[in-house]
Structure formats: C-alpha cells, structure tokens
Amino acid sequence: MKLIVGLGNKGTEYKRTRHNAGFMAIDEYLKKYNLELNKSKFDGLYCETIINGEKVILLEPQKYMNLSGEVIIKYINYFKIDINDILIIHDDMDLEVGTFKIRYKGGPGGHNGLKNIEANLKTKEYKRIKIGISKNNINMVDYVLGKFSDEELEKINKVVKIMPDIINDFVTLSFENLMNKYN
Image (tube, rainbow, N blue to C red; front, top):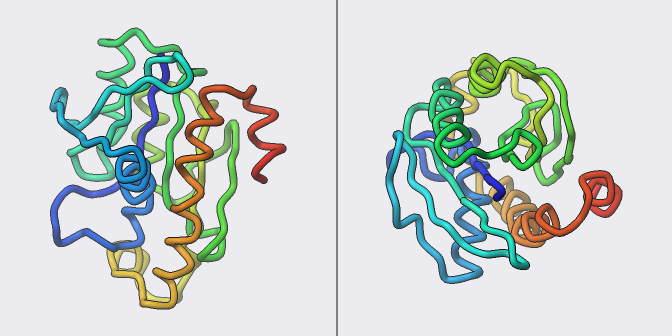
C-alpha cells in the first residue's frame, strides 16, 4: 500500500495560495481519474484507489499545514504503511515557480509542515516532491499564504499537470528511476 500526501491548508480562503501546491497536485490526480476525496478519518480527507495493482491512498490533511505530521502518522499507523511507501508533495520557496524536484530526503528548510512531519515520523528520510513557489522579500507567512498571480498560476498549472504521471510512476518504478526520469 502506498500513501500519497498533498500538503496544504483547509478552507476556501487558501485555494490558489502558494502553500497549497500539494493540494493542487492531489486535486489534479483526482480530476484526471474522476476520483474524489470521499472518506474522512484522523483529520484528513482521502480516497483509496488502485494503481497498477497496488492499493493507494491519496490524502489531504485537514489540520493546518504546521500540524500535517500529526495527521500523516495516524494514517501510517492505522493502515500499517511503510515509510518507504509514502510520498509527500509540498511547496518549496527555494525552487523557482514552474519547477519541481523529486527527493528522497532532506531538511525542512523553513517549512513548518515538514518540520512537523519530521517530528512525527522521527526521520528526514521520506520521499517528496517539492513544487517551486520562489522566494519574495515580503513576510514569509504572508507570501506562502498569498495567492498566485495569473502568471505564476499558469506556470504552477504546467507543473501540476505532470503530477498524475509522477504519482503513477511512483507506484511502479524504483524511486531512483523515478528521480532519473523526472529530475
């Protein structure tokens, strides 16, 4: 079983914000395959699907970003999912808008959602897709909770359109081959 998690903040006021790039990736997968987050458990909305014979849970935590790890660890424990079978999709200010990077491990940078995930998983070694949102000189909190400009949204949408293919390949390819294919 695989767990694919898109990070974001719940609520309509956060739609199209930079911090919700992970939700946007999951939403694109759902849209492409006519799925919906039709189940609720442990402060998360999720759906179960089968990808190439493998059961997969697509999850959007419904606690605020800074508490994402509290939700994820409950899914890991309840569904008995191995840490190697988890993929976290999140925004990253160190990457330019319109770019992404697939990584096996790394630090949280200034990302409080990742800090909470690391605290709950007790490791920095989990698979992730970092979606670039660039940096700005304004207050970091205001920036990540701010909405994408039309130009930025066009670039982000191009990245988000690739996410269903990456998610499908995450299930079928080794992680090294996945990184080689997309990075």
